[in-house]
Length: 248
Image (cartoon, rainbow, N blue to C red; front, side, top):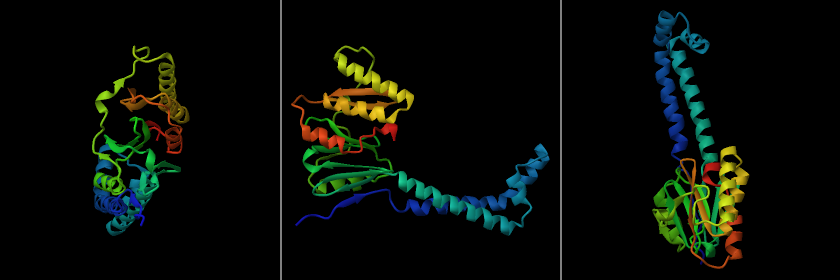
């Protein structure tokens, strides 16, 4: 009997916290708007037009209006946050990712381990190459662990290969010309804000066994374990989101 898919997404409580928090801010401003208006007029002999409009209203109306504006702004922010947050679904078939308008899938047999690299969720294959890397700061770590372990995937709370990463410097010894060229092109694309090119260069580096990540606007790389290029692993990466965190 197959297990039910496990969905990990931004906690629903944020849908309440944003409206309540901003509504409370609006409530407080409703009482403060007239004293602030008076202070600005005395000090600067002027005040912004919205402040002048609200200041002439009775306090009760100012409180009601600014509270309503705060709640509306909170609802909008909560909706935007949910739309932009990563959603992870794990089932018998594999791992599904959705982020904004992007979606991806990594088959279960290709995943050797799932782990966190800071606030990013990554999946690696049996050669330690990254099949997917996504920002996951909105997701609960315990829920992610449960989702992956439920379906028999290895879970690590920290990056197993963090100490293998080196900061890339153009022309650094130890890398062949092709790899240096790919990293050089990827770096230029990062500087120019060309997300598609960054993603394409990341995929090409994957194919030659080089893993790359971005730290402080600089590229870091590590060499994956040697082995023959597995077409199924390449396909697994090509069907995942493919976007690098700095481009999301």
